[in-house]
Image 1 (cartoon, rainbow, N blue to C red):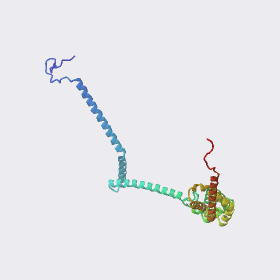
Image 2 (image 1 turned 90 degrees about the vertical axis):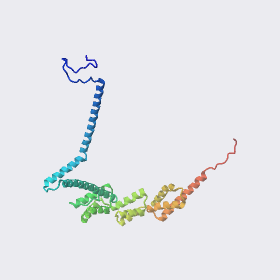
Image 3 (image 1 turned 45 degrees about the vertical axis):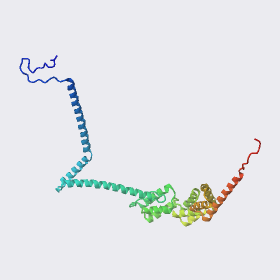
Image 4 (image 1 turned 180 degrees about the vertical axis):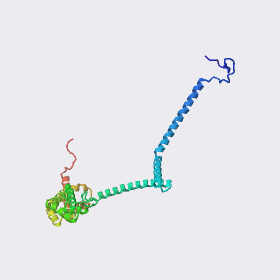
Length: 311
């Protein structure tokens, strides 16, 4: 197939000179050289792709925004015809963008502050009656809508509704007319409100007449109506309620000395509107009954004695 090693010639077949002839290449060396070239090519391709990605990421980040700002500034400089420097126009465009962001943040902060103010000024459960006043196109219709909305959840006194209308800047004569109409049809009834308030607050919270009268006066109920409402509470019923309150709290004070138990339980009754004399008397009676019950229980126990019978 080929010439043996060392028999290569640099002459043509006719004997003419053909120039220098390179010696034959070893196949193993040729294969190794090709593999090295392929490895260098692959490494260069990966490096080039990584650089391209980094350049692309850089263009898609702040550089693109900067280019947009510069273009906006250039357009402004060209449009106004004032011959202002392009650099100054770019700075103005960037400044407007920063001021716009600050304005948005300020609006959000003001909106949050108004929301907190509305939540913090809830007047005894009157929701929605504390909104910012606006010019009223129809004051009478506005007053009726406010009253109906507030009376939907629970009963209100006339004074509470009048305060809500005053905050919405409803004219006084219109407010009086609407409140009078609601009173005539029975939607506003301070007498019924006071009676229901005494029943529910005494039964549910154990409040005495003095505390109930204070709460009704705070809600604008007339003094005569308040006196009539609390007078319906029977003194014996008030005493039984005080005893029940002490009996419920008495076990929680075990382990304390007698004087401290008296102060703690009497203070609880005083906060609910009971007089000092009645409170102390009820607490002492409860402590005496407890001590008597403890002694009776100890006497009923059979004493232990040693067994002396047969084993």
